[in-house]
Length: 117
Length: 111
Image (cartoon, rainbow over all chains, first blue to last red; front, side):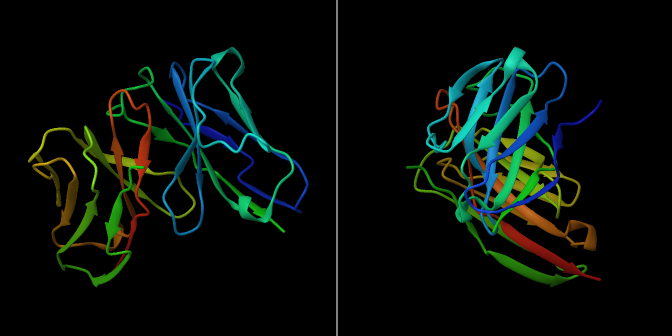
């Protein structure tokens, strides 16, 4: 079974530039998550989708971050414009069950390491 | 705001030693998960505990959920270099739709 795919693996941009990350979850997984992991910290949930609907985006900085999951499969996360404090690893995860079941296993991708200069 | 505090932050030990890492909160969680994350990779789930006082074993790893479901511990017996990594605990609440991660314990096992 193929795992969660993310691209690119690394990205270096200057502040105020835009950047987009792509995630392909495990086939058939209903729930998709985007996390931000700053160096030395645990992952912080940015947005959670169930199929193509948003379940939780309470910690997404909506003035600069946006995400979509068209057709309930792939997802993209965009930052526009980027700030220095956005430097982090952006992790995508998927789980088989419906949102609201924290005991479900989340399968994580390798992440995209973003450096904002 | 629910928070999970993990201790210690860093741990460097010799191969063969035993160790325990902790995950504590002032809040009650309906479930607690432990993940291990290696450099350049995403976290991988090790175990989920849901019942207060529950103990689960995974080879040399023993996980315990506190009776009040506010804390958890991970004990590793006879650590090996392959155990090196970042150990994350994550708490969840049914209906809250959100998993909250601790900052992790970074473990280094020297051969």
